[in-house]
Length: 170
Image 1 (cartoon, rainbow, N blue to C red):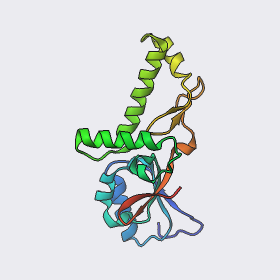
Image 2 (cartoon, rainbow, N blue to C red):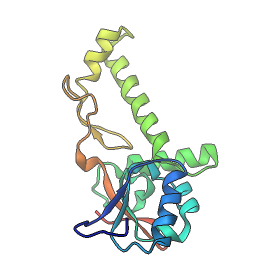
Image 3 (cartoon, rainbow, N blue to C red):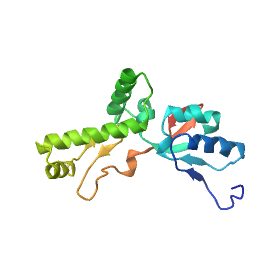
């Protein structure tokens, strides 16, 4: 991997402890290219595992890790701040994006069931496929029969590790 001719950046896709090891090894090898991880490492636990090796690392992630950095007019700001505060108060533990993904999924399901007025699978699916403008922790969901994800690329923000903390850079 030391022959980086023509390479502009390195991306490691993973979750759990593995990416922290890769991050430490990247620094030990003296790599100088920009280093990106996937959103699978979007937690403070990753920072603890990777230590100072994570400095300068970037990744796309939910703004959950940097809610106070969002501009006041950002529609996610209040949602993300509230989720983070409630989660951490209830569980006495820092948030991670994974719990937020599950939360958004559950809230979308509840909304679809309420809109359908029943738990009939066809009615719920139809209601879910028509949810528009739902602002969740992960982003603004606009579902359709052709798009069961409902999020666009703007749902992810680019974060960088600066001084051992997540910082919003885009």
